[in-house]
Amino acid sequence: MKFKVIPLILISIFFLIFVIFFKGLKNSNIYTPNTNLEKKVPSFELKSFENNNIISEKIFKNNKYYLMNIWASWCIPCREEHEFLMELNKNQKIELIGFNYKDNFKNASSFLKDLGNPYDLIVLDKDGTSSIDWGAYGVPESFLIYQNNIIKTFIGPISNDDLLEIQKIIK
Amino acid sequence: MKFVHIFLIVSIFLSSNFLKADDVKTENKIAKNLRCLICQGQSVYDSDSEFAISLKLVIKNKIQQGMSEEQIYSFVKIKYGEWILYEPEFNKNTYFLWLLPILMFIFGGAIIFKLFIIKKN
Image 1 (spheres, rainbow over the protein chains, first blue to last red):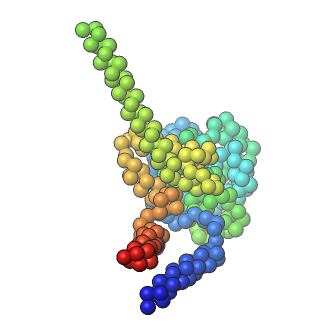
Image 2 (image 1 turned 180 degrees about the horizontal axis):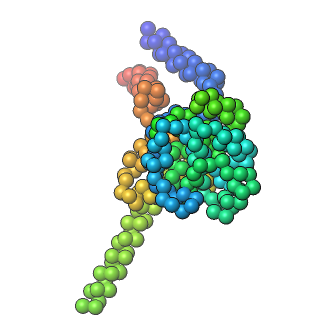
């Protein structure tokens, strides 16, 4: 009896481990961030492009959609998404807030001069600490906001599909 | 009297430096326990990406504001999810992960005990 119980336990343990690893083979090992983590807009106080103090409570107060777009003049994918932001700016139902990330004023202004300014308001995050409050990963990244809630996050540049999706949501 | 003054000033200066050194230590410890989410296999401490640099700065500010280590971990957990913490939490998804080594240790011990010690006697 003694000799039968131990091998049985060993075999069942190995079988269990085998099943776990076998199942693990099929799991994707690409990490996809959870884009529905925090819903509320974080509060912040930042300088605007015109050097005024801006508080978050004042920006997102209207009954309107907002797209907060993190961008920088040194960010190459931001150039790609820019045309879609310009397109989105034509829509009256949404306001675009630019979140200028770790940039200098001169480069940022010439970026907007060259490609056009789609933003209704630009705030400056000089050291990147405010972007952490938003749970942002880097540039570019966009948050669709309605009534002080983040309803969707777009990590990476806005594509044509994203643009269509946003237009569908705010319709 | 003058000597006492100088001594006081120097000692205050030195003690604040010690505090600063402690802060840097906790700052580095926290950064080492956080995963750099946009890097491959690097902690926030190791990484020089823009994300990691900003996060290190945030940690530094939070420590200066008087937040404890635990509070900072829960802050980043709220912002980025549990994945950012290197140490998995003990919850229903991780019971097996945490308990398996203990179970194996107990089973192994029992087997050794049965095979060798009881046999010997």
